[in-house]
Each structure stands twice: as C-alpha cells, then as structure tokens.
Image (tube, rainbow, N blue to C red; front, side):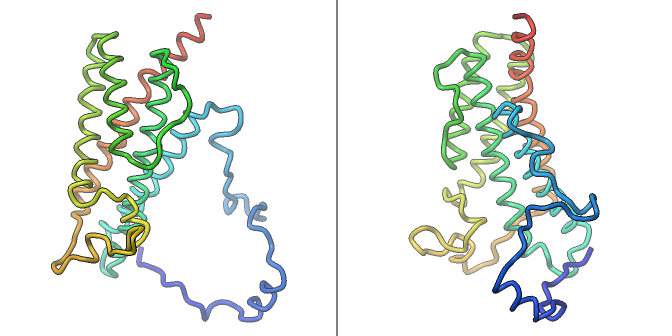
Length: 229
C-alpha cells in the first residue's frame, strides 16, 4: 500500500467556515458499524486494571507490527522514514504498559504492599523492577516456567538497553528535540541514522511474546487462587 498524502484540496473549504462555528463530536456511531471504533469493547470498568493495561499494550504492539509490515512489503514511497517514529513510539509504549501490568500482577501474587499501578515512563527502571519481582517469584517457585520467565525478562532488558545506548530519552520517537530543546541523537548526527526494519520486526515479535508470557503465568496463578476461595 502506497503512502497516501494528506491532500487539503480534497476537502470542501466551506466546511472550514462551518467547523469554525461548530464541530460535531467524533464520539458517536457511524452509520456503517464497520467504521465505528469501540473504545471499551475489549476492556471496561469491570475489567481488572492490569488486564486493561495488557489490552492497550496489545493494541500498541499490533499497530506497530502492521505499520512495520507495510513498510517492509513496499517502501518505494519511503514511508518508513516517517512511519518509523510512530512505530518506535508504539513499541516503547507497549513495553512500558506491559511492564506495568507485569509488576502489578507479580506484586499481587507475592503479597507485596505496592499492588497499584506504579512507575512513570522510564522503561529501564520498570524493567529492573520486573527483574527484582521475577527473581523473588522464582525463588519461591523453582521450576522450568520461572526459569523461562527469568530468561524472558533478560530479553526485554537487552532490547531496552540497545535503545538506551542511543538515548535515555524515550521522547525520541515523539519529538525531534528533548525537553531542553536540543535535537535528539538522529538530529545531531552528521551521518545517516538508520533502523534495520527486518531486524526490528523480528525482535519486536520476540519482545511482545516474552512480555505476554511473563504476564500470563502469575495472572493464571492469581485466577486459580481466586477459584479456590
């Protein structure tokens, strides 16, 4: 699919005047149900907050994967040079959301006091918290699964570390400059600053699957504990 440019000419300029006076809310049904997006279809107020995080994490990874696939399959229009920013933002944010969900469920099964959603946007710190909790969980449950969880979190740590080698500012995919108005690493670079999209695709899938695996084991344990009450 070729990149479609946003063409102002295709819009009725009279609508600009109308919208300046009043604009309809986008939060409504479309006449075609297939053109209506449901914000609370996959999660709602009856869903555990940690599960809500996972649902949204899936959404960020899924959108990143599909954008990446389109770039790999056909980049003749060089869409990758612009789409790489939302792709990387979605991957980084997907990791953040998943790590927060993992930390919540591990705190619950370990009967820790901090069972609320915690942490800012520092995915390196969130990952370290996950490592600490997984190690504690592993020491209490020495089996093949907890060994695999420990291996999995190190995969996540390595992916994050590779980003941090370039920058410790995760706004690099959101803005061209940091909070001090200095250009991010790719702006400052004299040589080309690039990403191997095929390598990114491979690693992104592994990162997503390992995050999913780490979350599901303690989540299942929690469900079994509730059933036994």
